[in-house]
View 1: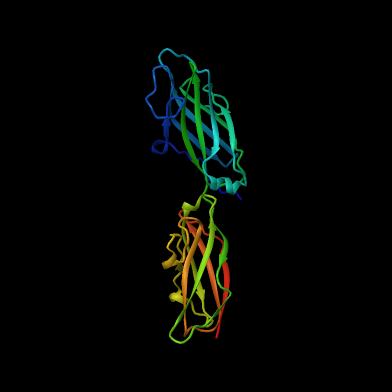
View 2: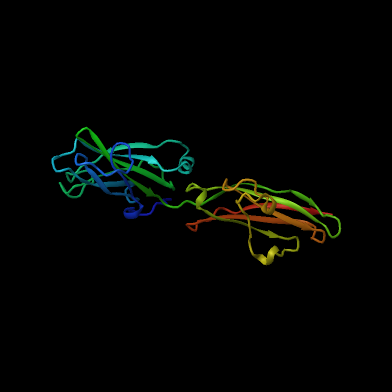
Length: 270
């Protein structure tokens, strides 16, 4: 099943431009071409990627020595989803109305090529565009956002058995859930769980109980912020029902994708 969006094009404010070999953002000299309006898109109908960039040549330069784009992973999280820590592809561009270029000699250098990404890949890939002439190189950058992939609950850590505390007291248990997302941990919006009590009623009036990845050890039981481990301290009062409590955990991301539900049973005994 394909998860890519059709013809996603990112331009405008999302684009960062660099000029010169070192990418410092300095103004281009009269001897360097200017690269602008980089474009990247994915077409799931034929599993191809389109890239293009507009090139403005200096007055005394009539042609480029070479122009190409390089494709890289944009983040370590995408590398995790692909099972590799490197992705690199170099593609030569042209302005001759071939290989995906639309109009000849219009200053827009382009190329359409088969995608090297596995089907269903999420996250982002980065494209660096380079133009070489007069012994110098200019470059520009664009990032292609691929289809959103849902988060995954990797593991749940919670007590299997809890003993009721003495009358009037509370027993505390810390629940921890490790979550991953191919689009990165910053894409995880919420991690919640419900608790079905032995009498078949839901705790907290049925409202999901949130977990936090905020590094608040005393308040939430979370040891480190933003590490993908979500935590919650759950109090067990002395008058709690004995029997099986069924926890159901779900993670959601900012794209609305939902993980599989993971169950964990805690048995409360006298």
